[in-house]
Image (cartoon, rainbow, N blue to C red; front, side, top):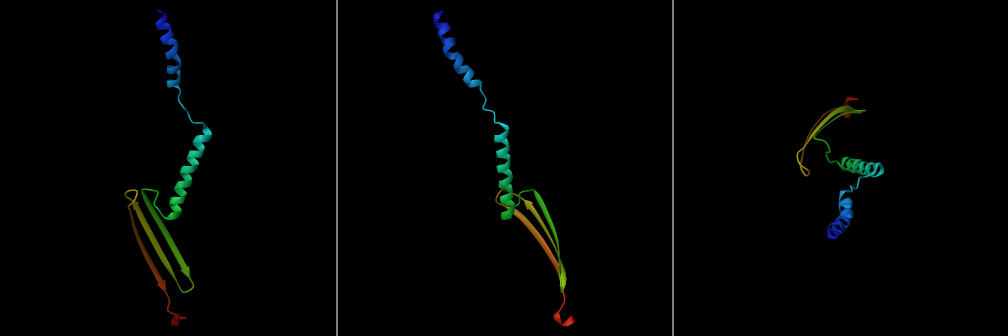
Length: 97
């Protein structure tokens, strides 16, 4: 009987310690979220695609003409992306002034 009581007393702290979850506090979760967002911003600044699909439009107006650009990108894998772009423009010859 003494052995059973001693064994339960010894094993009780082990069972309690095994059941404790290390839950993250709100501050830790918020800092992790901020780090993830900062990492995505850095990737975007470097030109990496961070979305599955991405499209960009652009208009250029100059004193001697104008231009239109369109860019379309698709994310394949972490190291491979497909980018397509087209640029159309009209410029006047200096003799036309």
